[in-house]
Amino acid sequence: MKIGEVIREYRKKKNITQEEMANRLGVTAPAVNKWENGNSQPDIMLLAPISRLLNITPDILLSFEEELTEEEINNIIYQINEKFKTESYEEVFKWSKEKIERYPNCEQLIWQVALVLDAWRLTKKIPDAEKYEAYINSCYERALESQEEDIRTRAADSLFGFYTRKEENEKAEEYLNYFSNQNPERKRKQAFIYSKTNRVNEAYKAYEELIFSGYNMMSMVFQNIYILAMKDKDKEKAYKLVEKQRELANIFEIGKYHEESCRLDWVTTEKKVDETIETIEKMLASVSTISDFTKSTLYEHMEFKKLDEKFIKELHKNLITNFSDEETFSYMKESKYWRELVNSNFNLSL
Image (cartoon, rainbow, N blue to C red):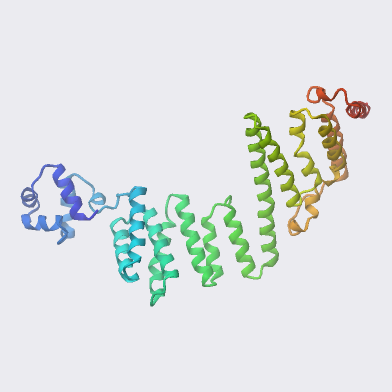
């Protein structure tokens, strides 16, 4: 909102005529009329008296506190894109710049306008495209000061892209500091910079860490959806999710033990005797593969803690104890295999 529009709005709220306002400020009524119609602006020395008269702050008078709704921002962005279809880049650039000047504290608008101008600058063949870079980047820099993490991150991403296109990789790397450490995009972009600056081992390691953490995240998500499916008694979906977890462990070379252990909850919940025996046998037989992912070439630049033989033996023993639980595996009492397993557990405990 322009200063004249603010004056008109708050003057009317105070039920003051243009002539009354002019008399109190020591100016003419036509001068107030010109302010409100945007034909001129009040002298800087009058800003404080006008604010006091209208009972508003100078920030409100100058629209520094005004925010736009998401709908209003989207409408402005829509208008910019529509203008690009019929007007020159320079004309749309000036119009967009005026919008930012009108709402100088609307960080979302500043970032989005800069992004649209940048996109059209890169895709539309325009003369002297570089002359717009400084202003667009200054908008991104302003957005970096936002209190909203999402706006900061998106602005940093835009600047990262700008400097990587120019192959100014060290400068691009600086903007990764605006990404949260928990944001996987930070690591991916860091790996990209490593690869571009001949830090090959660091690049491999960063990408491998993304693969490994990606597997863990997806595995947990599949497991959580599986639990929901079981609660909904959607057995077909639950079984499919179990099989997807097994495929996932295989694709990411996590190891045979992890592929087989995915089925345990399913077979025990469904009380499937033969499938339970098969799962128990395969899990016990593959305990030694529990850390096989550390040997995979997918993760060869990562460092893992080596599991000693004592840990493997203890795990094997604990599994037998768990498989011998009569409450959980009560449906297995008629199975000779399971009874022998229980007996072996009894002998181990002696």
